[in-house]
Length: 171
Image (cartoon, rainbow, N blue to C red; front, side, top):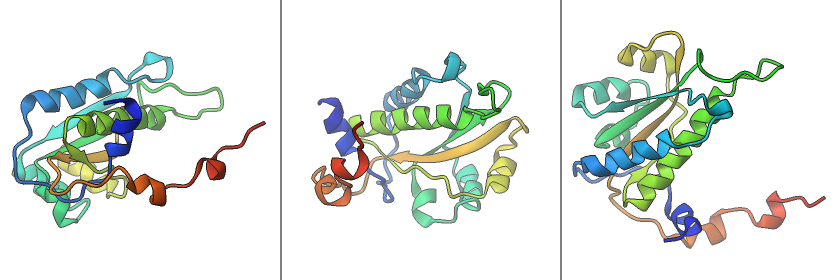
């Protein structure tokens, strides 16, 4: 499968089968994050793999959606503010680096027949408490991971995405 085919296959999954994720597939998704590029190659991310039902239910308090708690795995991807590169004006690139790593994971998951949903609208303080994160680790995204209960057609991009003319400007 070519890259654009994988990218078109990826979608936000909000309904998972109650099937355990193969460990080899999970490791491949995590490897995709490991090899992701980052500013100055600092790799300022920490990924917490949550499989324990009790911990997932506690995380549910930070993002109370039933489908979220039903995912077999929740990946919490954090930026390590002590390691992230800072631009001259102070802009911290940790968020950008984590976003690249998360995107790599979502694409790898899609390629492996797994589903994900990028979650950023969670309660940061509750998430931090549940995972007992130190101050320098900031949770940026939560990524439920599992086998999708239904598969979206890649053709959805024809009607649900802006055209190139709407998003590209030529000089």
